[in-house]
Length: 452
Image: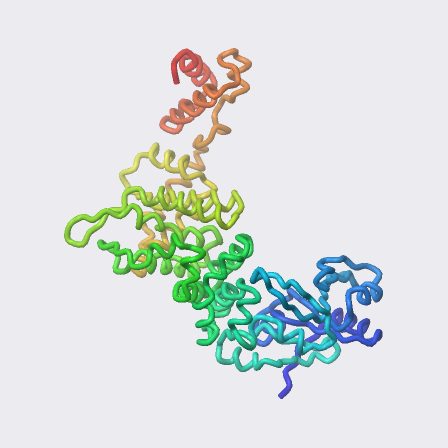
């Protein structure tokens, strides 16, 4: 039975413009694949036998999105549609970008240049008929990722495709076909030709997917992990002893899996996978198969920052995840004083508390299969009490500011002023009743005369 894509009215209207001018247009790639899998996807890409100048002549408003590669964005009936002319590609000198692009009039030739069979579908906008020239439907049924044609040729054309295979394995929960996987193993070194930004996009997409273990194992077994995340590879086979029944790498993967199952957010998932990467460097042997890992959280945060520098990750994400990694070893006891709770809140930051608690739950779940939340719940209850009491945790909460110190002629703007304010904050965290203007100004005068 012929499979069809449900073409919406606005897409029918778009298709009619092309047919009225004697051309064909197809919805291609992921949207068609996801429809066949029952997954919602409105990220549409289109392919046509009309060349870019012809497309621009059909519509009043267009954008030259990637005109050299045949891509034009059409603004039509309130929508934006990225449309690319059928093309063939060759001369991949850098194993990433084609040196030669030729426009063709044949849909089959255009589909044949794509990466995997499950991404080589097309749907006719006039009829909804789904075209499958590479047995992609059968691979969807068998949950397999298979390169189109010769996998070594596909990966030699574009080395990023090897990492895309891992990401699709993670996204869909599919396995990678044996011939395709073997080609990845042979050509793994070629990934060094791919830009850091593109690698980051694929790796983070893999980690944040529904089935990250599939993708990570494909990276590990193919050797791509050694090329891209050697810090994670270094955790493989590192025994932990104690409460841990598995090596560091397996624990990290299990922690990530717990974060996925608990539906924890992006930063928690990233921290889950990397929170113990400092352990190999920090490990010291004890007696009777025991080890210590003192300072591994600080080492791990530094290694994460190095990964971010290499993959050109944004500063905000780098710092957020590093903070979670560096603080994941906190241990709460009911004997904590109220001041100790406030110090913890100040060190961690209220904006990070929920994520840190989530990470702790995932970590504990990975160790024992479950997490007793009683101590965490008690800690959170005490934190809420301090919030309700409007505990001062930052400089903005102090009863005075730097402007007050200037106006009272206590100290001019300087690094020393900053140190004085931090000392005052520490005192107020310990004893909230001291957060009074008169007291803080007098204490600031004393500190201004000292070497602080």
